Length: 177
Image (cartoon, rainbow, N blue to C red; front, top):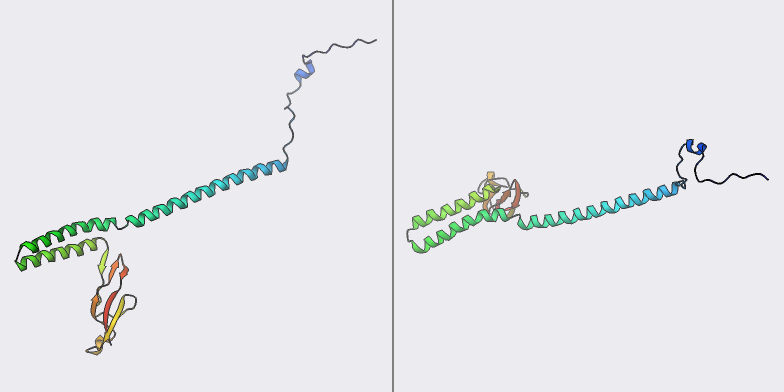
């Protein structure tokens, strides 16, 4: 009988010199790769949609806040004028000097106008201008005293105003015909 070599757990010299091989793993199929890519893209899409929804909510909230506080600056600047009105009213009740009262009221009116002008509000010039439906609202027509005033603004019932060169109130006018 032939003698069998004893089984050893030590690697032989041939095995020691052999290059190390990676443990055998199942090859990654193309389908598995595509599934992983799909999950990755789906995750990116969901994050992007959530980010967009947050952006939309945030901008809507900021817009509402801006609308609610947009007039704050103008109102704060008009509070000084209101204080002047209160002082003028107090002066009207205590003084009988008409010239002094008239001067005080004129100062308050000028302050109102200058405050509004500093915020970009300008009164439109309408009298003796050509009637323009883009700027004027005709209340009535009256016969023009001469040919030059036909189609022109004869009188202004209420002034028109511009805010930063944009019409915020049309002038109500009387037009010559």
